[in-house]
Image (cartoon, rainbow, N blue to C red):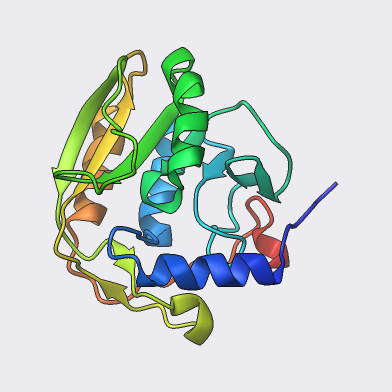
Length: 193
């Protein structure tokens, strides 16, 4: 059964995230490639307004944005999680190996959880037009933006992701393409999108 959580609270949270220079909505091309790299079924982060529709499940902390809570492979947008949500997911990350995590390089802002954790390894650090422009969800604009901080990609040190998959992901993260061109397919709840 498909359950979608949407409320005025989601809109207000997204507007707050749009004002936060440390939050990012990564391009759907990047997230699709990350999904393929670990065979992810769950996306972690963002709000119901910006979570990509091609995952079977989308969650943020204890909120189910779409689908159900699943312990399967996941793609995590660390920048789209509150400190509480970050702390909540850390034990799961330490115990599992089927995840890929996007974070910003450099010092973390006050009141956030360090993301380099025991059992993880940095797969790459990149800088390119890998994020959607702020407020894209209001305009429907597919333009991509390059922000001032580099993106770090972490994976479980127990997971072996093919060099080809990581190379494809790195190319997308370093890309200078100006548009995301989302594909409206049939993965996850995408056909309902």
